[in-house]
Length: 290
Length: 267
Image 1 (cartoon, rainbow over the protein chains, first blue to last red):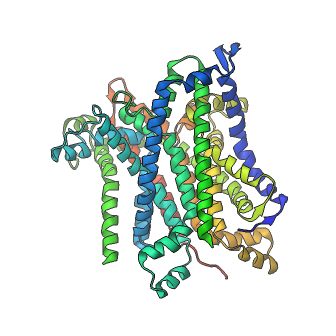
Image 2 (cartoon, chains in turn red, yellow):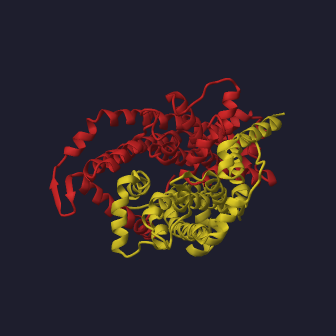
Image 3 (tube, rainbow over the protein chains, first blue to last red):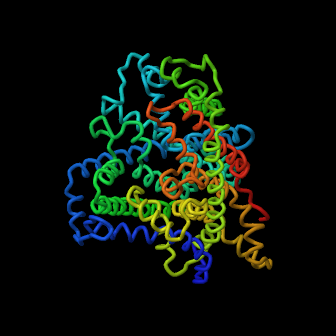
C-alpha cells in the first residue's frame, strides 16, 4: 500500500515508544550484563566474557529441550491455525448465536495459567477426572505421569483447548471486517464456498493471521506454567520445554550468569524465527493483494 | 444442509471446550475430601462453602478488586497510546518505521524467569513497588505491542481514500479519527481491548513480583490454596470459576463491535 511520507508521524508513535521502552530497555541491558559475569555477591563479580554462552550452546540437555520446543511449537501452529480458522468460519455472523459463540469461545483464555494446569491434573486423572475416566472406559491405558507419549498428548490437548480460541477470535474479527459487497459479488459469480474462502476470505485474513501465527509461535515457545503444573516436565524429561529447563537452571544455581546467558540465547532464537515468519508472511501477501 | 453441518460442528466444538470448565464448576461445588474420594458427573452433596469463603475473606476478594483495577488501567493506557501509533504505522512512511514496528513485538519474546529480578530493581528505584500503576505499566510491555499490531492490521484494511476525502471535506485530524475512523475499525478495537484485558488478567509472574500486599493480584492469591496438607482443589476451582466472570462480561460488552463488523460508514 502506498503511504504518505512524513517524519512528523513520529509524534504519534512517541507515547508508545516511551511506555514500552521504560520497561524494555533497562532490564534487557541488565540481563546482558549478568550474562557476561560470574556473580558471587552484589559486590563480588568477575567478568567472564562469553563463557556462559559457550557452556549453554554445548549443553546437550539444552539442545534436547530446544528440539522438544521446536516440535511443540510446530505442532501448535499446524493444529491451532487451521482449526481456529475453521471454527471462525462456522460461527454465526450476527444475532444471539454470534454473541453466545463469542462468549463461550473466550472462556478458556480467561483462566489464569497456573489454574489451567491444576484443573487439567484432576480432569485427566483416571479415578476422579472426566477425561481420564472416559479414556479408561474406552479400554485404553492412559497415564500422563508414566508414559511420555500420553504426557505429550495431554499437554497438546490442553494447549489446543486453551489457545485455539485466540486464533478463532482474531480470525472471526478479520472475517467480520470483510465488506458484504465481496460476498454478494462472489454469489453473483456463482463461486463455490471453497473458492470464496480461498480467493476472498483467506487473502483478507492475511493481516490477522500474521498476528495470530506470530503470537501463537512466541507464546507457545515461551510456555511454562501449564505444562509445568501438569507434568512437572516429566515423565523423565519428556515435556521439559525450554522455559522449564531455564527455570531449573535459574533456581538450581545461585549464579545468575548462566541462566542470563541462556535467556539471551532463548530470546535471540525467538527473535530470529519470528523475523523469518514475518518476512515470509509479508511476501505471501503481496501476490494475492492485487 | 451446509448450515446444519456448520452448526453441528460448532456445537461439537463447544461441548469439548466446555468439558474442562464444567469439571472445574463441578469441583467448585464440592468439598475437597469429596473431590478426592469419588467420581461423579454432578455434585451430589452440593455445597457453596468454597464460594462463601472467597466472598467473606477480604484477602481473597481484594485480589479480584486489585486485578480489575490494574487490568482496566492497563487496557486504557494500551488503547490510548496504541491507537495513534497504529494509525501512524498504517498510513505513513517515517524514519525507522519498519524497525520500530518489529522492535515493538520483540518485547513479547523475552523469557520472564531471569528478567524478573531487573524488573523488580527498576520499579523499586522509582518507588512503584506494590502499586497498581506498576503492574499496569509493566503489562504495557507485552500489551502495547500487541495492540499496535492488531490495530495496524485492521487500519490497513480501511482504504486511504476515506482519510483523504475527510481531509478534503475539512475535517480536522482528531475529529476525523474519532467520528469516522474509529467506528470503521471498531471490530479491531473490540478484539484489541479484549486481548489486552485477557493477557493482563492472566499474567502472574510480573504481577506477583511487583506486588506485596496492597496490589496483589488474584492469580497470586490463588497459590495460597496450597498448604501443608496439600492443595484445596475445591477452593481453587471456585476461585477459577470466579476469574472467568469479569472477562466474560468484557467480551459480552464488546460483542456488538465484534459481531457487526465493517460498515462502510459515510462512503
